[in-house]
Image (spheres, rainbow over the protein chains, first blue to last red):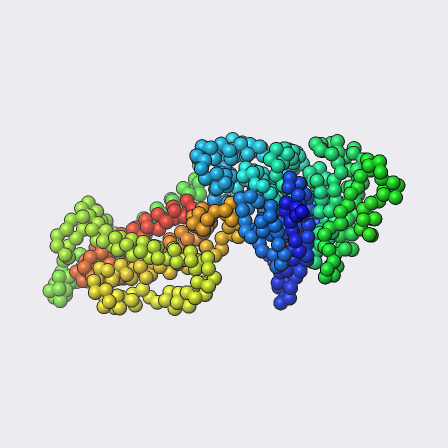
Length: 301
Length: 277
Ligand SMILES: Nc1ncnc2c1ncn2[C@@H]1O[C@H](COP(=O)(O)OP(=O)(O)OP(=O)(O)O)[C@@H](O)[C@H]1O
Ligand SMILES: [Mg+2]
C-alpha cells in the first residue's frame, strides 16, 4: 500500500554553470502518511527547497515522480498550499488583499464580504489586526510579512501544507504562538504537513517524524526519525520527557557530524534509497540496554 | 530671521530667474528694432506690420491674453484660435497613441512571455525602431492618401516602440515567485495576466507609455508642419510665413505647456502603479 504522499526516486540535477551538471539529490524516496506532520532537516543548500518546489508541482524533477492520493503531481494545485521561504507576497496588494485573493481563488462562489471576513479571521489568528491589514507588505516588518504568508496558506485549508522555514524570521514569542496555531489547525483539519526548518527544537515539538538529509551535492534523505513523544506536546514540558534529549542528541549528532560523512555517496543501482527508520524510545520496557543507542545500530545494519 | 523651506527657496529662485530672464529679453528688443528698419521688400511682403521682428515678452503676453481669451474662434482655414489648433494636435496624438498602445501592449506581453516570440520579433524591432518617424511620411501619404490619417500613422509608428519594448521588458522581468503564487492558487492564464503580471510589470509599462507620449508630442509638431491644414505645428509654420513672430513665440510656449500637461498625466499614472518591494 502506497503512502498518501509518495516520493519515488526523485533526482534533481542543475547545470553547474561551468558546462557540467550538479546533482543536488539523487533517487530520493520516501513517503508521508495522510495527516502526518513531517519535518525535514538538513544543512543549507542540500536541496530542501528544491524538494518542496517539486512537491508543490512548481518544478519538475530531472527524474522520478511524486504521487499524492494516487495521483501523480504534475503541476501546482490549491490542494497543496505553500509558504515560501521568501514569503512571496504581492507588493502592490495590501496585506488583506494578499490573503483574500487566495481565498477568492479557493472559493469563487463566496461573496466579497465572506472572503474578507474569512481572510481577516486568519490574519487575526497570526496576530495581524486593525490598521496593519490595510498596509502594503513593504510597510511591514520581516516577521509580519512571514505571518501574512502563513495566513494566506492556512486560510485555504489545503490538503497538504508545504512550509519552507515558515518561522525563520519570527521572534521567539510570536514563533511560539504561531507554532501552537499551526498544531491546532493541523489537529482540526486532518491536514498533512511537510515542513522545512533549521531549528531542531521546533522540529521535535511539531513533528511526527523528522527526515534527515545529508549535505549536498548528491544529498540523500538518509534517516527518518520518529518522535516518540506523545501529543499534545507543550514547549516547556516536552524537555522533561525521557526521549527528548535522546532524540535531540541524535539529531545534533547527525547534523553536526554524520550529515557530512554520509554525503556524496551515490547509491548503487538496485539498492533501496529509502531512509533508515530510527526509533528512539526510552519509555519502552522492551528496550534492552543494548538498545540504548538504537540510532547507531540502525545505521550500521 | 525666518528661514524658508527647500521648496520655498526653490520657488523663489525660479521666480527670480524668470523675472531676470524676461527683463533681459525685454531690454534686448528695442535695440534690435532700431536696427530693423523696414525695407521696401518687407513692406510689400506684409512684414510691415508692427509684429515683425523678435517680440518682447510684453508683446507675447499681450498676444497670449488676446489668444487665450478667445481660443476657439474659427475664421476660415488660415485663421483659427489656438485652442482649436491644439485640439487638432491633441486629437491626432491621442488617436495615434492609443492605436499604438492597443498593438504594443498585447504584443509586448506576448514577447515578454515567450522567448520564441522575442527572438523571432527582435530583429524586426531593432531595424524598425531607429527609423525617424517622419521618414515614413511620404510612404504613408502615398499609401493612405489622406494627410490627416498619415499624420496619425506617423504618431502611431513613433509611439509604438517604447511601449512595446518596455512592456516586453517588464513582463519578462516579473519575479518568478509571484507567478508561482498565481500558479499555486490555480489562477488561469487570463487571471494570472491581469492579477499578477500586469500589476507587477505596470511601472515599467507606464514608463514606456510616458516616453511614448513625449515622443509623440515632439513628432506631431514636425508632422503637422509637413502635412499642413490644421494643428499647432501648422500654426507655427503659418505664423512664420506671416512673419508674426509674436505668435510663433506664443505657440512655442503653448507646445511646451501642453507637453508638460500630457507628461504629468502619465507621471500621475506612474505614481499610482508604482509599488515598493
Ligand atoms: N534553478 C537552479 N539552478 C541551479 N542550481 C540551483 C537552482 N536551484 C537550486 N539550485 C542549487 O540546488 C542546491 C539546493 O538548493 P535549495 O534551495 O533546495 O537548498 P535548501 O536546502 O533549501 O537550502 P536553504 O536551507 O539554504 O534554504 C543549491 O546548491 C543550489 O545552488
Ligand atoms: Mg531553502
